[in-house]
Length: 437
Ligand SMILES: [Ca+2]
Ligand SMILES: [Ca+2]
Ligand SMILES: [Ca+2]
Ligand SMILES: [Ca+2]
Image 1 (cartoon, helix red, strand yellow):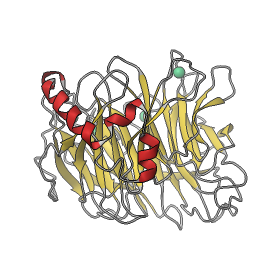
Image 2: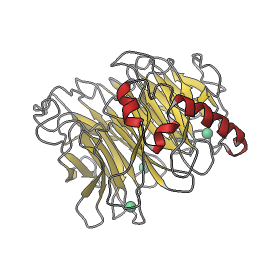
Image 3: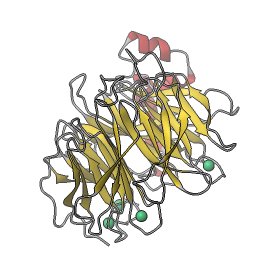
Image 4: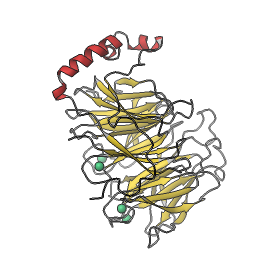
């Protein structure tokens, strides 16, 4: 097992109490009249009002024996000089069995080797503009990941694809600490997010989503063309593209998940039009809406008892963390509950069982770039099987302006750690999960 925090701690920017602070209700959830009106009269609203908050705190304290453990994280900055920290991926780069951290930074793409976190630059200056996203997955089962990168970040140029967007597959050198060979693939303008996604026949495909459609102005016009790229045996030969989606606008992120019993991945996509579920059991991709709220980030998780939920940030770069719980009728829109309206420039969500309790928690991160303010990371823990009451815990504050965040067990202790890329704060940070079992 890797030794924790022994060698590579370059700086430990102060984090306050290891467990953060905990409260049972967002304190500002009813600070605006509109919010108060919206919340008034619904069963859930009582969980958000301050008087009820105190009551629920006392009630919950009485049942403290059954309450999930408080999260405890120990911060370690493994790089304090990143430029922007656009995109993170977690995968084993060198095949030693330990997951490494990959980062698409402004002009460089690099990986940090677990456990000493030595930085190795894979590619530099792929385009004149910034890199923006990265996807890493072992496609061929040799234990070492394959890597794709999105670059040419220029969201204001939605027409000229020579000035906006780029997609590269990086061919690994024999020594993976050296530079990788970039192979340029097809791209649409405003390439923004990408994931390796498992196809029905078992192969992995790269799915790439632009932020905007061609010619978009003010999030209107043609929808964004999302393509799946099938990799040929020789990645330098042409890749086969198939269309996944062409109707979303201002679609900030998507999330692959094996939702059901067939082996291929399904997709959750957030967009101006809402949250959509995509599947391709019959061959071509089909979709249906789960929500009609403009959504920037979306992940899925499980409540105590196993019911599925969606965790979102709304709208794009938004102030709202919301949760949706699987409705009884699978064709209905999912009922929405606002968890928090005080994020600033929300940019990342993780839904995972960080507490090791057999169900999932939601972690949201915000960068506070526009509007300016104090960045942070907050955990929401469901306290019942219906997802009605949630405990709120501060995980991180001004020390990381979260641009991206991932969850993964980096040291093999069975506890999922958090990996944060801080934009204004220039740091790449591991939050080691030291929650008591
Ligand atoms: Ca490794
Ligand atoms: Ca591989
Ligand atoms: Ca499936
Ligand atoms: Ca761990």
